Image: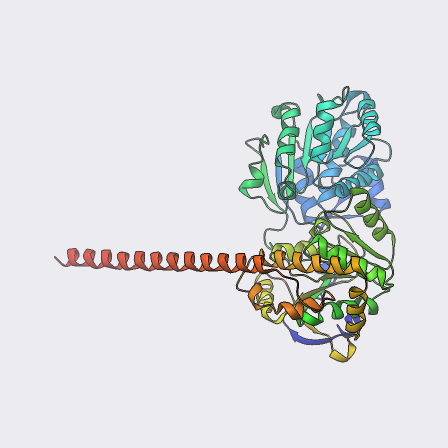
Length: 519
């Protein structure tokens, strides 16, 4: 690991050095044997794609057979092709023409993911199938013209699709025979329940169409989406039933235990040393992404981009497109970029702020070494000393981890310059203060309170990693956090007491039964 990170290996929990051909997502099944339309096979061969991933293996044939499916599949498993290929094949064999209107609709949670799927569909269809896009932030008039003229496959976000279904006269959906929901759990997480329910209600009757649902989880909430009724004989498919929480295998991952006051200095040193690499840095809040990205640009760091929920969609798309196109650069982002978006050839995924859960860690880590990339990716998780137990949680979930250590002498000592820049720039100062406050609020809401305990953080030291001379006031957040902790502890004690009482009662009943038997 020394050659990759310029750090020392400290503790070895589990190594992850399995090569690509031992990948736990690939199979030996080939696309040429899937009875797909010849033009699709030719394009896949041209792209160098020969073998199916597991999700493609279990999903393509049932979808081609017309079955309703609910597929559990992680990001990076190859699921996009698992539904786009059958959709295009079915449209082609049905002889769908623009005059017939739309035969397949794919609903996705984000504009970026919709555009990505649109590009995949356009490339694979090679003009054989007309593909349309319906997302916010683009010309609605042009979208209307395309839909009315006839788009056999339409990919869009819930809000824009609802808008068109309600207001675009002449968009023909009466021949719709397939509906696909991609990242269904994220559609709910992003608050699209109402829009999604409206879209489903406005589409043709459920009995006349095939429904395919893809999600990282198949919870009752996902399967219970309003107005979505999977047929009684639908199939539940799990792309990875034996390795529920394993991350990518051509991927080495580890963590750094870092003092709160050194967090940014270590990150800054790492980014400077790896300036010729492609790096994603995950942070927990929009304010933190905004502050650190602006600061790094201000001090001359090259090719720094950012994606976070409060940016305009056009700005997010621009950053996404730029990062895909470059060979070296830094993308600082929140979890909005952690799922769905296909960003190939990422060298490092840095989780600067702790993830909300093991699942969140995996979704973030999945950005590196996607699909059939032969390049080795590396994940680095920043933890403070009191958070060390989170490593045991990850290892318990079959996530292999190394402990990395930055030698103190390797850390660039720019703390005074850092503080000077912040103190003399009003905008950066206010941005740093907001970033600090948002970090504290986000940290207070994390699960696993026994590990991510806000009270254990030295706020004055943490403030130094935001270039601040002292910690901004966050009294209200701290008070609410303490109140919640007390309430949780009280609830836990009451639960333990009740359980103890029930056990005593059970023992007493057993004792009485024994007396009866003796008589």
